[in-house]
Length: 415
Image (cartoon, rainbow, N blue to C red):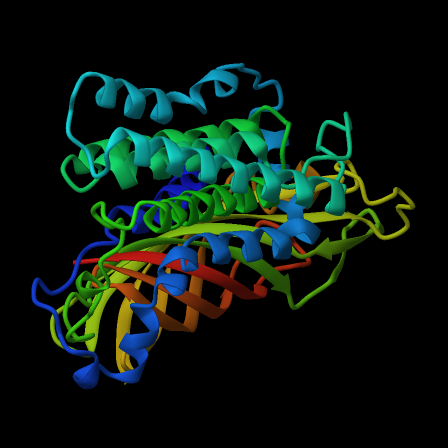
C-alpha cells in the first residue's frame, strides 16, 4: 500500500518532467486545432498538474478515514523525522549546482527571484487554506492539517530544481520528484497528515513553482524564457496507445448489510481502492493488459453508536486482486478518447475475522467491466476518469458474491 501511494504521487509529478516534449518545429496557430491552442496556453500548462491535485485533495477530505485504515492496520507504529529535513533537499542541490558553476536555465539573479516568488506563493496558498479549512490532524494535535506544508515545500523545491536543471539533467527532476513523493508518503505514515492534505500540498507546491518562474520571466524580459509553447503540441493522439499507470478512488458496495450466524447485523461501508494498471495495444483499437489492485471492505455492527472516528470501523477485510483482460479504445476528439475493458481473474483475501470466514484462507474469482474517459495531457501522459462494476466471491458468508461500483481517477504513462 505504501508503494502504491508513493507511485501515485510519482506518476503525477512525472508529468512535470515531460513538460517540454512535442514537435521540434513551431506550428502556426492558424493550423492548430482549437483544443491544441487551449492546451498550449501558459495558464493551462501552469495548472494542469497542480490544480487536479488540489481539487482531488478537497474531494478526498470526506473519505480520508478509508485510506487511513490501511495505515492503521499495516504500520500503526511508524515514526521517522527524516521528512522534516529532506523537504529542502532539492533546493539545496539546486543552489549547490549554481554555486559550483553548473549552467542551468537562468542566471543566478533570475533564479533567486523565481525562488522568492515561488516560496511566497506557496506559503500564502498553504497557510491561507490551513486556517480556512481548519481540518483536524489525524493524530488530533491541531486543526491545521489541510494542506500539508511539508509536502508543498518538497514539491515546490522539486519543481524549482526541475525548472532550472531538468532540461539538461532529467535524472535530477526524477530524483527530486521521487523524493517529494516519498516525503508525502512519510507525512501520512507518521500520522501527521491525511491523504487529502498530501495531494493538495503537492498541487500547491507544483503550481507555486510554475507561477514563480512565470513572474520571473516578467521581471527579466531579456533572459531566456522558462516556457516554450511550441514544444507542447501533440500531432496525433493515436500514437503511443500502450500505457502503464496508477489509479485510486472509492468503491460503493451494492449490498449494504449482512447478518452473521451469531445473529449480529453488520453495516458495510464505502471504502477506497488503489490499483496499478497497464495494457499493450497491438493496433489502434484493441489491446491486452491487466490490473493489480488493493482495497478494504469496512464494516461495523448495525447497532454500533460509535461516532465516526478512526475506530468506528470495527472490522475490515483486506484484498488484493489480479485481473488480466481485453482493452479497447476509441478516439473521440483531439486528445480525448474512450477506453473500455473486460477483466477476469482472482482475489486474495487477508485478515478476515474468523466469525465471517468460509475458511482459514481464501482465493476467489473476480470479474470487472468498466470504461474510462482519457485526456492526453502530453504525448506520453494522460489523465482519466473511470467507472467500473466489479463482482466476485468473498470469504464473508453473507456477502458473497460481492458487487461494487468503483469511481476513480487514473494517470498513465504512454509508450
